[in-house]
Length: 298
Image (cartoon, rainbow, N blue to C red):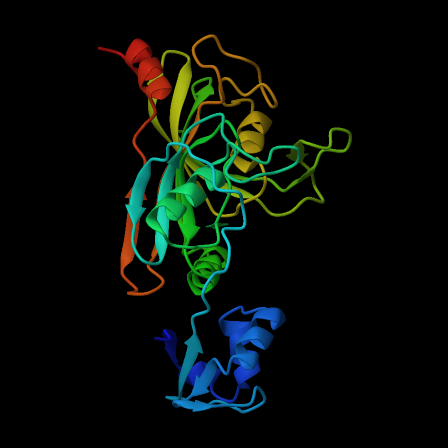
């Protein structure tokens, strides 16, 4: 039985063509639209429609949900920590020292490989679609969409700021003021290709922070991203002289932790199907808890 996603045309979209609505509002690619057209998977008020037909307020567009044909990565047996799962999404707690997805010379041992194996064991095929990435040594929440439509909707929320990500970090120094915003543009490092740096001509990058508590001469921070630049939190904190402890790329190693002390604590977004607000939290990892336990005041 075919499944469809349904949309009602709002007043502000009156007069757009069907193709315009799919591209501008739903963010469908031309390739995806062509595939749907071949399968007669675009209906306007329950009838097949040409792409140049103009829509009117109150019209109903139905889009065929295409079935996935492959995982996109090689399934590989491995442990995953599931924080949330339903028919549209799965959210995993990524451990440190693991890539989210194969990259470069790494083709296996990633969160994506293990998730593909989990789906395979259930007898279902979902292309692995991470909505965002975490650095290898950053732990915490990673959201995967199980279908292209959910991916499109959540990516749109990310572009408008409605998909919120909250991190915790332990940084060098006692950060003052204790609540603030880091607004420094970030670009590629001029001489080190794998790094980023604050640059006047870089892309806008905004990070909001709050000190949760001081740990001797360290600060435990809560951070919220307004933008999602590569290494954004690490670059911003290093730029103001409070690098994440254990971050050997932008700071220095730390005897208390064997990786950068950065954890994606939670994600908050509107569910792509039922439109309810979802918040999912990843528990504080053991290495964080050990440091906090040693340094917090009695």
